[in-house]
Image (cartoon, rainbow, N blue to C red; front, side, top):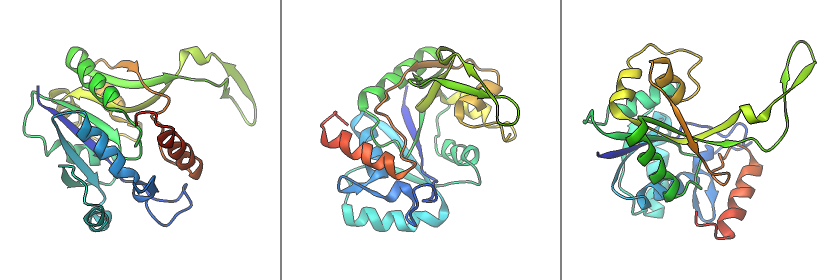
Length: 226
């Protein structure tokens, strides 16, 4: 089946303490977002759809005109929430019987191997979500300032890519938006489709704070095949 990727890049620089949107910040000589796009380009024949806020599209074109990336993709205007942005991206996919992976634009260290594994799992299972076990102990908040220990083996840290059959996604995203939709998996699951977790990658970090940029820079310079 034809493979598509919806790259969602709608963040700002608030937690990064920067006036520049975090997806545009430099990482080893090029924007964070460009690393992400190049990873999907390297993963084979994938129709890449980049979803950006309307206010950031012009700035992105200015950035890539200077960098001259050899990446082919379509730009789609984002919506008021991540749900609406993904829905806009789905509207750019003509086929119903295809596979689509949704990925955070600020996860630039995703590997082509992980991308390919996500599509392969989605082709078999219908919905494949990358996740990793927790490393630290966790506690659950109870009342006031009290908490209780929780079994970390019962939890997973969810990542992207999250890959699905396009038919499932288009059906699920016809439903009205709910604040409880934190990612695509929650939307698809709420529509009645089974969601399966697959092994993610601890190196597939999300750039959210200044410390994340330092870690990503170190991993790239260490030559971890990102």
